[in-house]
Amino acid sequence: MTIVTVRVVNTYGGSPLNRLSWLRTSHSFLNAVVTLPGARWMLFKSGQPLLIPSHANKESFKYLRTQDVAPLLGSQPYFGQGQNPGDSVTDEDVAAQKHSPLESIRHIGAPVVFLGVNETERDVTKALPTSELKDPLVAVKKLQGEPYFALDVAELGWAEDEIQEKLDSLLATEGRTYTWAEPRSLMSSLDSFTAAVFASARSMLDWNLRNKFCPGCGSRTYSMWGGWKIACTSLLPWTKTGRQPCPSSVGLHNYTHPRTDAVVIMIAIDETGNKVLLGRGRRFPGKFYSALAGFIEPGESFEDAVAREMWEEAGVHVWNARYHSGQPWPYPANLMVGFYARADSSKPIRVDLDNELVDARWFTREEVRAVLNHSSGTQFKKSDYKRMNDILEGKSTNDKKSFEEATQALSPSGAGQTRSATGDTGEDGEPPFRLPPLSAIAGVLIRDWVDGKIGFAPSGVQVKHNL
Image (cartoon, rainbow, N blue to C red; front, top):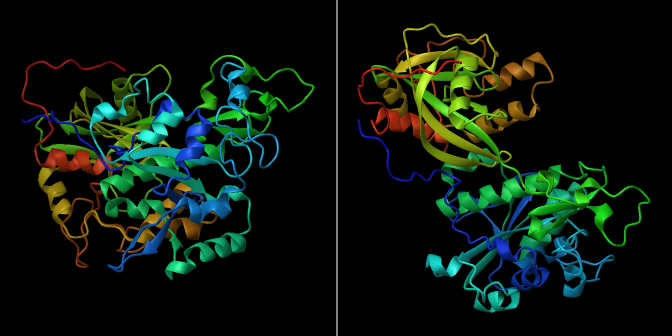
């Protein structure tokens, strides 16, 4: 058995941007690069990216220039804002206090995220913070590439028609229409560059959108560091609350920085190597089987979580858990950590422990290969993705009928009609079940197993973990 030894870069991974994180605290740097002619902007509305029709009659991401989005940004300066619109903080203001609450402050207007620079020269040594590049103004002069920024228009607090009017005027000169896309439906069509930039942008904007109030004292928060830090407004020098200082005024606090929630996602391979365990989630459409997954809990290693989740979701003991690859998952901000493990397929399966699955079963390599080779075995429509998203966000579960319609979104045989998950292609030409595409790490795990890229060589006594 050939084991994967090369680095696997999944969809949304392999970011091409130099994030220049050591310069995020400099409002001088950010204000300089945001006005460069090559600056590019990715726009969202409540997490949905802005798309335009392309010449190939397909939709593609629309990158805007700073001059295009200026009406959405408010008055300058965009970073290092003082108390009132148009006011600026000075370097002396920032330097007056260690870990100053004024570092690249943006408390007026919607948060803006500086994603990094797409360097024209990919020599990795140029990405290092040399002594001269630590100076923001020198860094701007030596910058070779395009800076990327992101903005979510839902943060503007404008009415729908006002947002539409602004965007209509921005794109009118090009004579193009635009649309806001359901992001999951784009997964399989994005090039690697756009996918990686999109993942960072969507996750960071979502984090800014969700964290409006300080967990330490309940005051409003504001954006710092080009969108990579939030701080409590009670810390601002012009704020007089008359209350005890916010706990965030001293020390380091995880809630002021972006978070990524780790999720293990795994397949179990039986001892013959010819069967794989897949499950059908309770919240997912009828014929969709995938790898099992779950969040890391406190006090767990990745391997611990693999064993626990397999037991809780399917009643299956696993051992020899091995890492495969990772995938950033911007829905909203997860890191999918892929594993495969060994299990005994002769033992019974139970899905009644935590009730997250409606079904789990062992599939042979031939059964899985047949679905992967089917023209629609991993293909979904935009409407399918939308309904899947509605289930996850609770938008279509207000009544029994809408829930049943949503859960059958990927089941062409119709609601209430049961099909064998392991049978042949049905009379309607549909596969007996569906699998995730290669744009999802679950699809990569399953495909690599089918192709013999991952698995276990025959061995003697295996050490099984006790739960």
